Amino acid sequence: MSRRAGTVAVAGRPNAGKSTLVNALVGTKVAIVSDKPQTTRRRVLGMLDRPEGQIVFVDTPGLHKPLHRLNRAMLDEAMEAILDVDLVLLVVDAAEPEGAGDRHALELVGKAKPPRIALLNKVDLVSKPKLLPRIASLAATGLFEEIVPVSAATGDGLEGLPELLLRHLPEGEDLYPEGTVTTSDERTRVAELIREKFLERTREEIPYGLGVVVEEWVHDPAKNLTRVTATLVVDKENHKRIVIGLGGQMIRDAGTAARLEIERTFGKRFFLDLRVVARPGWREDPRFLGTLSS
Image (cartoon, rainbow, N blue to C red; front, side, top):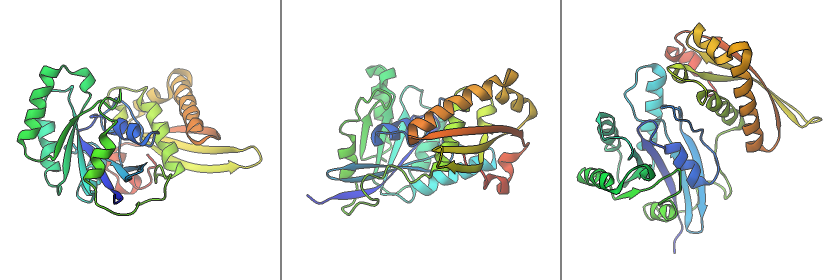
């Protein structure tokens, strides 16, 4: 049988479970995850090698109507991926009622060349009687070759998914060397993991206005220790106080959680020096956006 390989854009509304799905399929954490919408800000590649071929998943920012320059850049990232891959996988949150956001996502995904597959995610949270109308609604669009119910969190429905996706990919050789997991560099992944731990601990509007810039990266071979200096950027002074926390408790707790996960991910020791600055309007500043690590 001929080998197949290609790119699969994982698209959908914010918080539909795209990154959880990619991590589950790749078998390791390549994209950060939180319960906050718009966690993913740029395309993240994750590779899955199978005996029949290679799938390159492209995790994309959520499809939404942008309010800031940062959001517009995120939507541009998603659309570039959708229009430039071999297969589009639309992830739909089955636990949420169908609404205007779903119709907007369908409109954007409809611009992609076929083939397209719809994945109804979070089916572990939905009863079968409620699931069937969602399947019928997606089928009625005529956009999708397949509609597959899954749960990325529990793994239900994922076992045969790679083989299904490979059938829709072109014949060809692997796009990346066998064993490659992601193309994201260490600095970017470290910055993302730092941001993830603060997203987990903050509420209201702070997650949308939080960025991370890696300022310094120094490896000490003698101590086998990598020292990272990173700045957390927020919109407002009161947000800065929240991110630091009373007596510095928040930044210590989130920083420790980030360091531990970074060390588990890379298998080596890290020291994190985290600072927080308030920079009003940074999400509208194109020059500053170009300096962001996460």
